[in-house]
Image 1 (tube, rainbow, N blue to C red):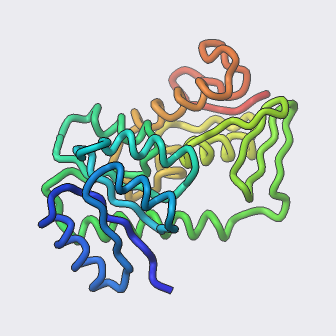
Image 2 (image 1 turned 120 degrees about the horizontal axis):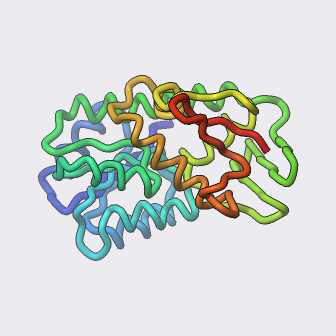
Image 3 (image 1 turned 45 degrees about the vertical axis):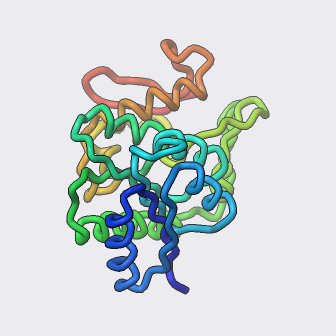
Length: 229
């Protein structure tokens, strides 16, 4: 069965070019031209990838990404015409998996899509037979990708969950930021270690009662991050 991709951009020439090129690689491509239409399509369909422009009418790409992450872990690559690093990091903070700056080469787009699918495929193949991890008042269901603290479910983005799962499966092991970047985002990911800091901060805001004095995810200054409950 062909992988299904949603392309979201208000520039029809870009949409047309992406659709044609991705279909040449055997993908099934759906399109949307504004944020509201994109959100409805993601709610009502199953996609293997979403290419999402940041500057959209009705609802911008950041808002769409943030709302999608409330109900879906579909991989999202943000398309941005802005070169500012904070825009890129902000996109990832809202739950995107990657970003590409316009103007882009279609071969790069295809490479990024396939790199994310390869990582997801490897992650699926490495699932352990025991899918539930319990550590104190923390419970992680690896199959359903859900996290509970004291019986209350904590809504995490895909990358936040990946970080939490890695930390809890390796208690006490200190991970340097560049190591986490390679393990969670992959060696092909073009971003830097600030991406890790942003995601750890967001993770702490969700799981820690007092993020400035973390109970679960700790920092070893100058070395990296580790889990210890």
